[in-house]
Length: 175
Image (cartoon, rainbow, N blue to C red; front, side):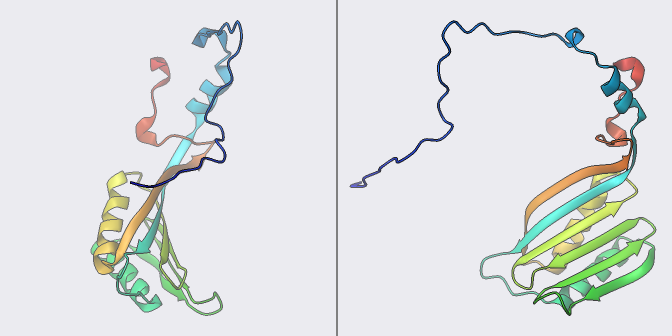
């Protein structure tokens, strides 16, 4: 191919040999699990938070704050959510972008647009069903088809250092 390659630095790729290395192995019984088992048993999940990061496809039609507001309102109507605080759009004083938010009986949605190609959606629902977030994203993206999903991040929300969704709990007699 006629290509010359020069490697200037290799970082973190090689492990230095350790003479007479003797690995140590541990069993679960070697650790005091009481604190972690108590935390696991006492956590209480109240809902699911899903963060979507989207971008406009290359060559896609530019979006506007009005299109985001409309897509959010129509998505909420399609999903038959009970709105307690209507869609609020803030498009002034935050650069070229906008923010849209709504409060519903089922949770909250906040959408931030950078005024260019990036849209972030923060969806919280009291119902932890994963399909609710999927349905929301499907309906929203149908209204702005030039958006492409970059990242979907989900986490439970609750008390007592919640790290699991309720559906993932194992009864204490099982561990």
